Length: 266
Image 1 (cartoon, rainbow, N blue to C red):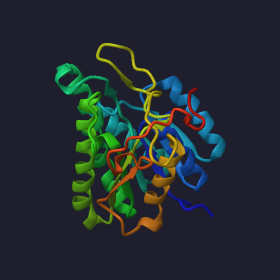
Image 2 (image 1 turned 30 degrees about the vertical axis):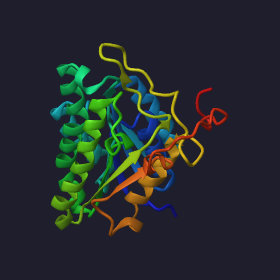
Image 3 (image 1 turned 90 degrees about the vertical axis):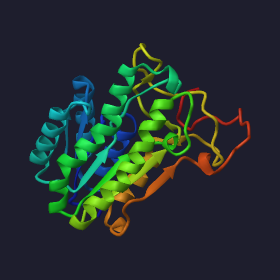
């Protein structure tokens, strides 16, 4: 029997990258899953692939749209028959110093990365409280150890870390846990990252190798999410777990040109 047998989960931004890997691993562990995403075509493909592993569905939603957030939670609960796990994962970013970031990009990124998580938490909380469920918020090591080249993204993910803590305080009396995962450089990772004014594209390549000796894989984050969602973590709330291979352990000066990401780009 899987560790998530009988649980029902909603994974936002679950049509690709880390979100898809979490949904896939949840299914392997016995959960039923609904994923959300902005791209209808990508969502339908993800749904078809996920259904090979169990009960899975797709609901189109933009995490920056409050009405879409509320509707997607209602539809997910309707499809699943209940909700024990919310994974807040939908995120976007821009490659720019904070001082060079246009105000329009500030509004767009904060609306999705912070307000979207807040809205999903509010909408899902009553359903989670009925089943003593949990929230898992995907932040980033950039929210712990800021990265100048993606300044606003770092700010938004630092906000997610504190959001997860405050939700743990608010939701704890209802039996709902709230925890944060902070992935490091992960392949495949977030799709929506580009300089201001350019098309969204996959973020990858040029990453320093962590002390552990390899770039993170989406399955590493998925494994941590399974633990947080499982009954094994029943007394764990308000925490932040780094899944970064040791990159934020301290200043790390080592060049490993001979080491390439396992399964990643050449």
